[in-house]
Length: 383
Image 1 (cartoon, rainbow, N blue to C red):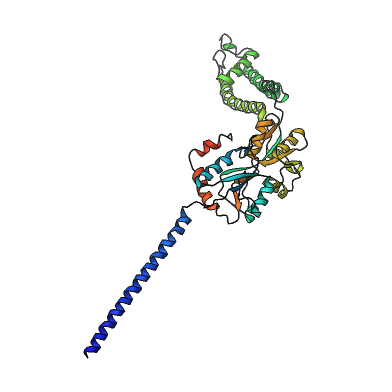
Image 2 (cartoon, rainbow, N blue to C red):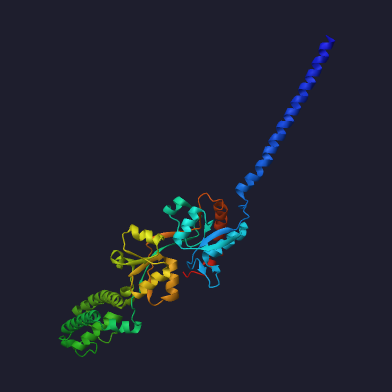
């Protein structure tokens, strides 16, 4: 009995030791698992992409977003934003230039890591590529040869002596003559009032009274003295208010030269035009979708040159780029119409599933929400 009891105590002691050891091992394993998972969690939330290689950044001359200087350096809205993001993420990079189609192809094949330009985010492009959040919103516009605007003084004089304006003035004079004659006809036969200096005894005095009443409600030097004449006077006062308002409206309409000479997109029949654009661009896709005749040119500059020379009737492209080149080279020769044909959102493009997309997006959103971002953009784009 005593031997059995000692053996039982030893078994219980061994069991407690094993249980304690097992619990210790279990807690140690859980702690190790937690510690190894923490760097991964941190990477998912805050750490920038870890890369020691030099990124290949595709770009193209597309001012005011990408401006290639004679010395080979770049500036512009997109460059300013990318440079800020690259510094924040400690990225090294080098630029590679190409046209739109080349950049998109190189992204799909992995020859470049990111495209920084004035690239529009579209559903078709999103199939083979990834895009960042948009950093600028604009639209497609139409550039056409400028309408010749006459000198404002000459235009004003021309309109003042136009047949339409003379008709309005002539009609007003006839009305004044009729009212003046009518009040004279009522008043001049009143012999008992002829000695009153206020009496309207001549047709010319009736015309004077009608004109003065219409413009100033009368001076009081000549005025109807009979009940019928005064009734005519009251009627003419209110009628004259309507006539003056109508005359002012007609006068303003005739003299609005800009309204008649400034074109708009609705007045331009795109389906009957030969429209210049750049191949591979969203403007080319829009024109094809609308079944509008296209003339392809390698650049915006070449397309606008064709418009200026008459080789093309107009050019459809991104509004900021059209305005930049027109303001630089064709300020008096080409107009960029204010209406937009289709909305455009610009973003940076990356290969599908790029690890750069998420950290770039965070820095991009933080930058464009900064109060100073708008003033930086206005360095390159006039409102």
